[in-house]
Length: 440
Image 1 (spheres, one colour):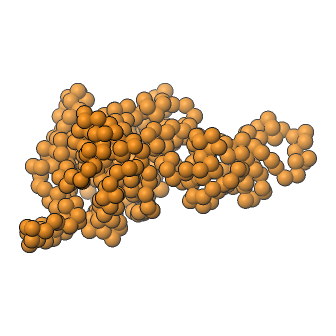
Image 2 (cartoon, rainbow, N blue to C red):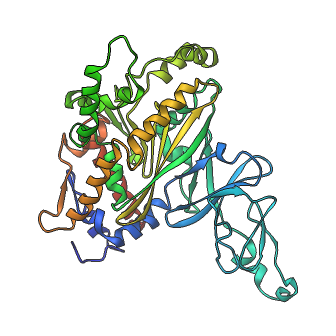
Image 3 (cartoon, rainbow, N blue to C red):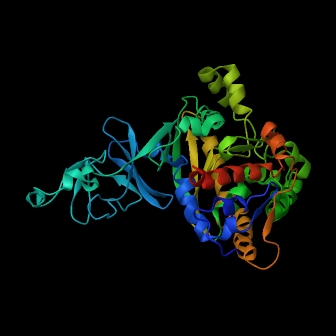
């Protein structure tokens, strides 16, 4: 690995990203990870939670964004806010539970400073002791820090940087993905259902994110899942309906031609969709009455648009991946340069058949549980890859597959499902984020 410092060295950072390969330091260097927190994650719109998880005033979720503890909390007027989970007094964490109801105010457990649920200061013990001091003139007197917050179709996002582009501008062409998800409900509403599948992996977050849009690996990496499914399907009585597990596992072995023809599209800011023409989710059986319910709610044209869109993964760079069918949300939460938390959430469309949620829960268990039929293959590759990258040998990681001149890639966003142009697009966004502040 290189021993140079990357801070305030945009030239050194640029040297890590070639048009068709990246240097291994992007996965291994702790200083680069710190810069990602400062320059990429802090300026991006990161997913925090869903409004269905905090239905009542005072309901909250706590999580971490770019190493910053935050609170998502429902206000009395029904709006939501994201606050830094840090008392203005000594910096103690105000709420340490993952979720709950704070009531009408927030109280720090250390010295009992209290705040309204919008973060404004409410009270301090020994108030007389602050008379004549500069408390009300400095940051400590202002209360909890509010973070820029955006809600779109029930999905809540936050931007840690005080200034920056709006969520709508940042998400751009990815907004219809969220519309598609919400409109799979006849009522146009989703709710998070059940618990969360969480896995901590000893690998860099970009290794995981690249896998999300890699349609080549299922044939080889997941042969241990799709081959037994194929064997079982060959012996399954033709007059009996096949189990849902077979319906969901068999497509992993669809073959390279299928994945190549599935199509993909890249967007600015590193966003992308894998499976614009087809995906491993395209062949799910129709559910009785569901299409009719959508037509009554949304009309024939919109229903066709919703049901015909079944991408393998849609990525809002840098940390969110969505599936429209099944309705699955994946959140990547980088913890360290070689440690990543991944959360898997199931979304239930309101007023839709219960079978839709059953399909989502089954798929999540089959593919994302650490002990599932699929995820253990991926985790093994991720963690051994992280170790082997640090070894001797070629310091570059290949992204050559289906590479064309950069100007051609930018002009032709529609690519094949097996193109590494998806990864190249993400690294262009990564590079832009890491060097833009030093170029300003």
